[in-house]
Image 1 (cartoon, rainbow, N blue to C red):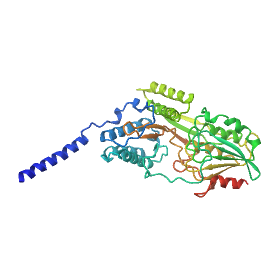
Image 2: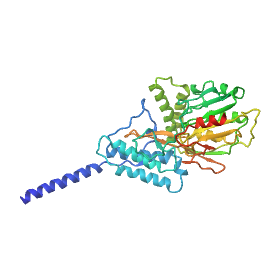
Image 3: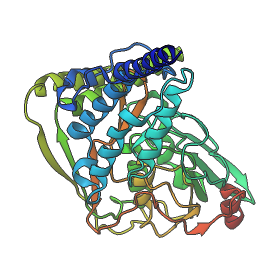
Length: 405
């Protein structure tokens, strides 16, 4: 009897040891061994996050992400002291600590824990596309009304309100490249705005950013001069990984167009090809550090050339990135008042591009440049405050129109 018990114990212990050995028997991939070519997304469909993962797959994704951070993330040089090192340490720990074996939620657990780590970093451009589940740490969205237009590009209409001709202009919820067809006729419609309207309402609520060229042009046009603004200093590190990520952005836009059965616009194809060409030029070669200065302006408001009538701008905590940087150019205009809540505070670690983790298919947003302002302002996770704060649950558009009557 004792012999049988002993044999059972030996078998149990042996089985447990074998299981543990199998869990750790794979060879871990070091981040330095990841080839830059792997950062290029070559799929023809938007990646769908996988729910079933194994330890080796998670470890590889961790090494892949760390490699991208080391080679392309602007936060490596510009996050506050100790923050980047903690980010890397926390991400690496996920390779060992992410619980696996629940099959249908492994991917969600890994995704959520990554998202929670990212949220602790003072960089709002570092995030996961889409949502892992409803419990990810994130700020509660403010509710000061929805944007009157939830598409790309712009919407403009003149309405008679309270006996006044009020122009209602929205730049939508995403601002694409200035060559995008959604901007067709934009400058022409704005050109006669002074003659056609008694006041202007610009709706930036829910605008997640994009490309800031047209909102900057609008601010300058309404100011009658280059809008008064301090210098912006932009630092970036051109490299093969940098251009790999810059390839992924138009690649995703092309996929979206195809899936939505829309025409693929030529500028997207051109951007993708150019990024790939530059990737090949930098592949296996040293990176190039660049410091660019976007000159500000000390010009005064020109009421004759600009718009010398009330301008009311609607903002909330979803106005982010290019939306915020564009909004900042209006603040020196003497006729401007902003209504709503603080903007998101997603400005400094910019030019974010998608990185696709190869095993989990999690898509991570990574900032590839760093922006600072000559006056030392820092708005990351703070945002720009409104002139008129609108209580949560009230409509900023109604508040602005009430003041214009």
